[in-house]
Amino acid sequence: MNVIAFNGSPHVDGVIAKGISLIQRELEKAYISVEVVHVGSKNIRGCIDCHQCRSSNTGHCIFQDGGVNEAIDKLRTADGIILGSPAYYGGIAGTFKSFLDRLFFAGPNMPFKVGATVVSLRRTGGIAAFHQLNNYFSISGIMITPTIYWNVIHGNSVPETLEDQEGQQIMEMQGRNMAWLIKAVAAAKESVPLPPPITDRNKTNFIH
Image (cartoon, rainbow, N blue to C red; front, side, top):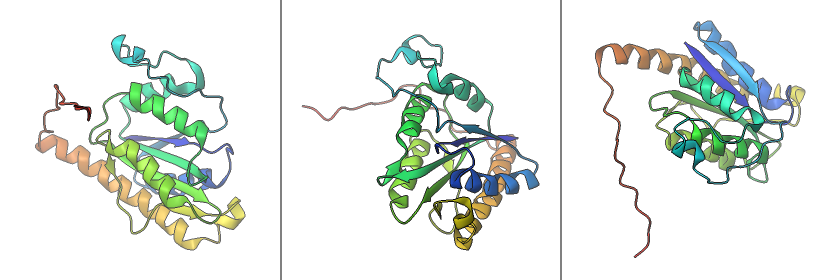
């Protein structure tokens, strides 16, 4: 079993990396491997809605920058996904949004994979960023790991984050709950068949 974690912070060893590491530690205790992919410092263009990823049937974005297609390939066999971003003006970091828009639009179907989030912030804006990350999960059929509070951790630096004991506890709980959920899904698949996917979606535009 394996999980792919995407660090959307510009800082490879910052607060988001610390939050991910707390989840990772709990997952690895449960013998679930974790690969961390740092994307927040890359130069990544946004999705241009060209639909080439779908019309070409390649399952890849037509643009080759930012490691998007490599991430798509990793997610095909992953059991879980972690998304981590600092709060920028009450939302996720811009580079990370460009990455995620292309990843989830061009990427594989992911129903019943397990997702977890990490948001870092100095003071406020974390809830909006938290919801923004979870939007990618909910539209993709990914099950969101439950915790006891919103998945935000405070601090401008790792030493400051170490003072946020509640935030650290939330991350650790996410790791334990994520491990349980991944194993529960795997066990369920052996005895309960997954519901059939919708092959012909009713997509309605709100026009007359």
